[in-house]
Length: 179
Image (tube, rainbow, N blue to C red):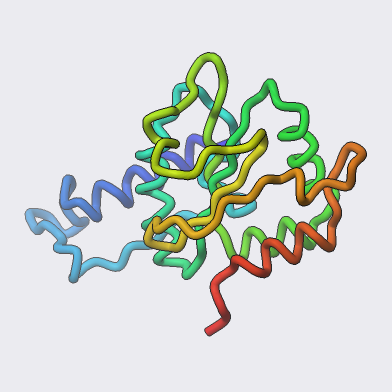
C-alpha cells in the first residue's frame, strides 16, 4: 500500500515542480531549471500497488512518467481487481520470487489499474488494446508511449502461479536497454 509519508513527499515534489509552492529561500520561486527534484523511493517499484476503484489512473500515469524518466525505467500498468484470484497469485508470485521482484523494481514503475464493477476505468483504458483477461499488463516507455500488451495467461504455470523463467524473460525483454 502507498504510505502517507510517500504520498505527501510526492505531492511536495509535484508542487515544487509545477511552481505551485515557493522554494525554501523566502520570496523566491524555483523554476524547473533551477531546482533539483528528489523523488521519493518507491517500495518495490510500485507507485500504485493496490487496485483502488477511487484512484484516477490518468493522474497516476502522469506521476509514473515523471518517476520513470528520472529513474530511467519503463512503466508497467497492471490491470485487475481485488475480485481477481490470478491478481492475488501474481502478488504472491512476486513475494516468493525476490529476484523477479527486485528486477521489476530496478526496471519498472508499477501502476495497478482497477477494473471492477465499481470502476472499469473504461475511458483511461480505451487508449490501449483490449485486455483478454485479468490480470493484464501493459508496458509503456518512460514517456508513457504504449509498447506492449501482455496476456498473463502466457506467463502462467497452468496451476496457481507463474513460471519464473518465463516471467523473468518477459520483464527482461521489455526493460530499457542498459546504458
